[in-house]
Image (cartoon, rainbow, N blue to C red; front, side, top):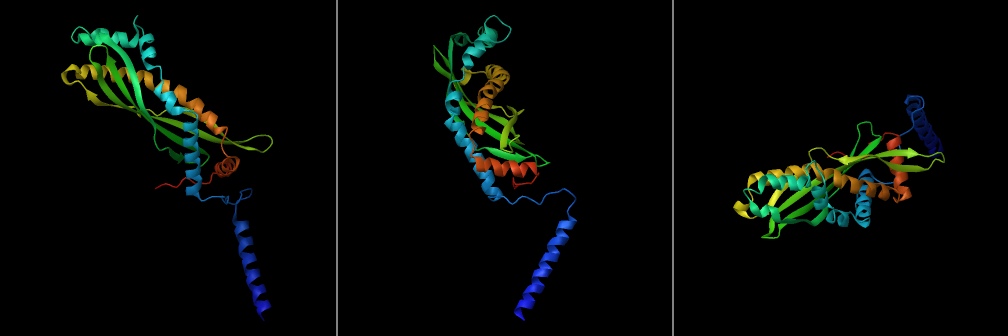
Length: 249
């Protein structure tokens, strides 16, 4: 009697499965069963990218950006962007002629963000970076300190080569429009007028995003080439099928 009941249950389950398969549109694959939970998969990817960037020396690169050299050499004025700026202000603030350094300190890689495209086939990684810029003069030393934050946005695409191997490749990599934030941390009171602060931040806004982007994007490409094969396989399969695994909260 129990064998008959078991056979009835089995046939019922088989009928339900057959009906589900017949309901699927022709050629549509069943949803992918991820090796990891969505939360674990996202966490693995962001932590691996973050650790990879740190291993590739992103903080050292940020701390050694040739910002002063670029400001002095760039622009249309003979003395560059920085010289042009200071020339306009030095008549009222003579000590500005003595700016000798733009020192970068406390570079940081903050927590990475991850979103999935609406069609589910691409990922966008936000790489938030921060640093402190110390403007120094030969007369008073540190004139002002600026806190700088900037996001780099990276597009990740899923591809499979002719051998069927899975790869995550770099698509667009750019600084996020409007993400550059510059604020005054410390300054010498009346020696730092608002005009000076606005002018310096304006110059940085023109120069810094492209400079950081040019240094960070190649690092991301390098990190992608060393990702764990199993992790890449899971993510690529999910993206190719358009499966949502980045949980929105």
